[in-house]
Image (cartoon, rainbow, N blue to C red):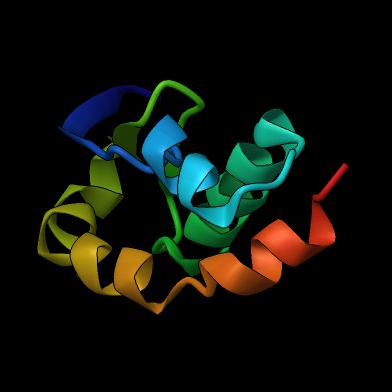
Length: 87
């Protein structure tokens, strides 16, 4: 089965955000948590890879293209995720 690249998501948390919180976090765990949320929300046959690439199986291309990736990213509760992954 082939996979088609749909888009690239910038889902990782910037250093500026961590600096605003003034605490130390397991940044890899934070990114993994966000990635897990994105993949759980993604349509069947669509995967967000660690590098941010969204790829879709042949029968899921249209669903991936029309999916509201920005909306999912906006609904992620970063405060909650950071609270879980503080050092």
